[in-house]
Length: 384
Ligand SMILES: [Ca+2]
Image (tube, rainbow, N blue to C red; front, top):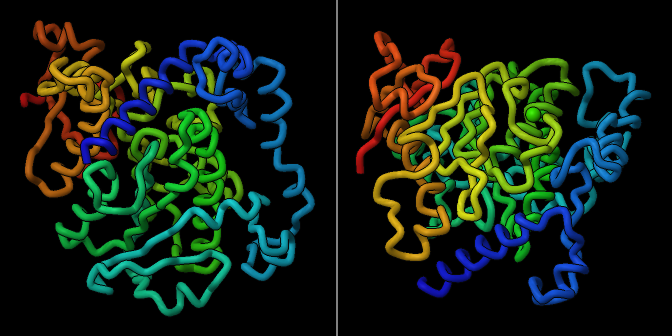
């Protein structure tokens, strides 16, 4: 367990070192010994790294005009039409690697027994316990996580919390561990594009096959890189179907690599009818993993949003920010289980909040049971 944790932390440290040199080519980095092997720093296919105005980004972003969709005159789109149009590879022509992304359904109707869903195989839905009377919640993990219940898989615990709360929705966990477990963080960050589009394909299938009758009944919860996967999924499913998904919850959306990413490649308020975000490790420092971007219709900044109580500098795991980063799913789970109730005040920064300079006549609830009419930035203190 300790070895696994050290490996995890080593990846984060290496990642952030590279992040500091993101304008430098990988061959230069490897030449000066910062990389163990002469591997190029991955230049994202959609301009995730660097300015969206640089040459590489412009060329690659143009891919997202999706020209092959313009000639598609099928409305509504059926599964057969999709398969016929791009045989075998789904709507966005993502390649065989998408089969490494696993969708696992569990719900109350099926006693929360896990069942794998494959968008290309209708039988996997027919034999599942899919409950068409219920809404759908998808949960997407972050860097190096997987679908296990290991201590390092913080996001899977969100699904477990919904099950523990006996929630009736169709709960889908998106396991992309084969694409998220890259030694170089930016390779994983780059894969958020593929994961997001694959989730969009799933949503389009669910909608067109009437497993989901209204995208407003879809809620995606994403942690770290998974928050950006959620945004990409919401954006492209919405663009394709001409309707928005209901809600995205971003749990400390990843910062490194996304600072200058185009909006279609990161979480922002246009990706769903309602986007709520909890920031716990925001910053531009070497040791922070969350974005400083205001990313939702409502953004919560518990304890200022960068450093969380109990995450001191006593051990290296806390030094690199992992501890504070992981507080976002922890806080959210507490709200699902109604173990704690977090109320926040509208304010412009944490200092003013602490000084009592912001009017706080009406507090709003953070987390699962948020009032979806809430807008703006909110601060609160959460003690250890
Ligand atoms: Ca977006």
